[in-house]
Length: 471
Ligand code: ARG
Ligand code: ZN
Image (cartoon, rainbow, N blue to C red; front, side, top):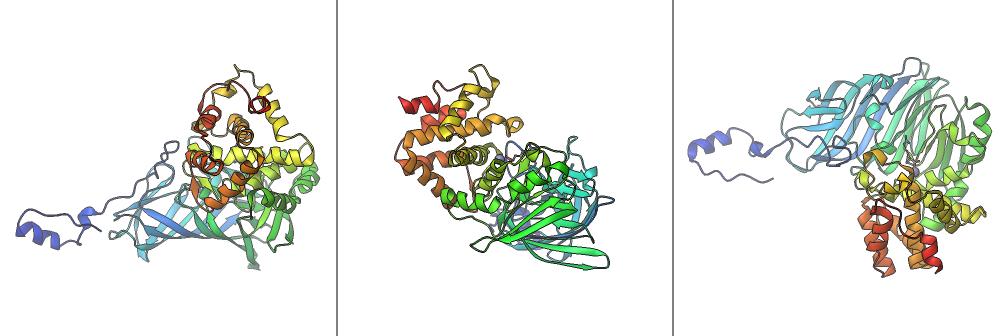
């Protein structure tokens, strides 16, 4: 806390004494955390350590209601601050005292506590709310999947706004307790370990705990009717998978894929080092979408991923993200390559191991698939822009960049880098440029040009990674 030097005389000084010592310095927290791709995402002025969500959800009406309790610490002298949230709020308390609040825009909740909060203060924010997530549209868009038997929150880069108030950016990760009450016969699935479940008055409450830092978009909720399988890995991790009872013909192929999660995770441990979280699993709700998402400890899979039979490769992709994306998160959304390039490359390594084509062969194939005039090459994986964040080039050209690295530094160094990086930045955030520096340090080679060619040029590199390596 710093005080302003006051030049004027006694009158000014005595007036100042009448108000809290440095109230003049207290200012609002920024309404965004400073991500140029998504200026409204996240907020300034505080850092969250824990979310406790105690909710109730009625599948018949899509009504979600309850209380979020947020433990945080202020990072500046704060007069007010924002949370990112879209549902209707009825009460907010900060450290026990009622606070003023206002919705400013679709996804900002502005909170003004009765007195300023000095920098470094531990705060507990209680937000009471209710609403139908399916009715919340932001720019015509929703991240909430309404299903015949419930609803699901799973989307990137934003999903939390539809179901709990948060500092909605990967830069502010926190631990979670998610407790959700649903009518008997339905289940509520979330991240981490199912601590307990119990039923009374016709409602069953599911208590989930995720005890390692977790980004808000990786926090998931699915309510519906599921078949659940549970197990323990040899190292003692609880495994829980959930399959909608309504998967039809895809039920067998979904199970044949996701029940291999433990095998996939154990293989990935040989590549990336120890698995970073307290639980393993996956879930398949009866949604119509076609993507998957690496929701922490328990990825979300659309049934469509299994329409042609088993798909262990998608499990490899989402479990690889547990290291690359979830434990080590993007610093800003432009760094998406540190997630997707590596998750795609893991699928190539799996193919190599399964005898379905080496990573080099797949790199050659992908390169040949895209002629020089293909707009594919105009997308820069190292800074694709918000509209192309999940463009195929971020994945495939992103993986080509890693094949180029592998060919440049050799297998021993390449795999040392793949294992060292998740260790170095465990539970943190990192930029593309951090990876380039790290690879240079481990290999002892200058690599700026190689990464510039593969990640930042809006054109097809002159020769593919493969051919360079062979001459
Ligand atoms: N990180 C996810 C994956 O690679 C991508 C999700 C993109 N979202 C979407 N609606 N396509 O599996
Ligand atoms: Zn991915």
